[in-house]
Amino acid sequence: MDMEFRAVALAGVVLLGACGFTPSEAEALDQEPKPGSRPAASDPAAGGSLQDTLRSPNGLRIDASGVDMRLKADNCEAVVEGLLFCSGTQLDIAFPDAATQHALNTGPMLVRADALAFRGPLPVDARPEAHSIVISDVNADDHEDLLLWSGRDGAYGGPSFDVYLFDEPRGAFRLNRALSDLTVGYTGLFGVDGSRITADSLTGCCVRVRETYLVDDGRPELVERVTTDDSIQGAPATVTERLVEGELRVIIDTK
Image (cartoon, rainbow, N blue to C red):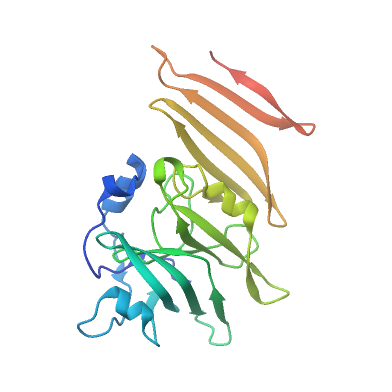
């Protein structure tokens, strides 16, 4: 399966300060496409705006590495140039297997004109940021899931996502609130390593927290928390907690 990055530049540039992105997200927004990547296909109405295209009967076509999507919205308002907050959204998805098609009436979405979709893995130390639609297997069941940029409830006004897991018995995507909550208050999208999810947060200038969750049947359980304080002179102070007999216990403390 082709896992390359796909994004489309339709209009404008997001103003990072106005959106309240964290420094790591700002870097991701500015990064160049990966070698070999191509712009995602789209068909905005001739001479029309992105809002007009989203409100049109056919909506906005997005090609994410072979996954064909149509995004429609009843109403969109500009947050900053190139970034829309849309309500009454509908996402139609056709995977390369033509028999696999889905239609979702989603909640509100943020539509970023020059970064509409990403399809691929979410490595812990090289995660994509601030894409409207992310397609990736986040619960290690060999089925791709959907993550939709739904708000700005991440740390310091950063992006938060609604996570839809693919339910194989029902052949449909289902909203998973527990995994969605792992994007609220954190710095950007979580990373995925098999059945483990890693989420990062930042307090002030210097206190970084990395939490690792084990996902079982769509339910994340916190199994490790590493807190690092860089404000202390000399070596950073680190506290590592791990799940032992059902409770988090301090394993390492370098304070």
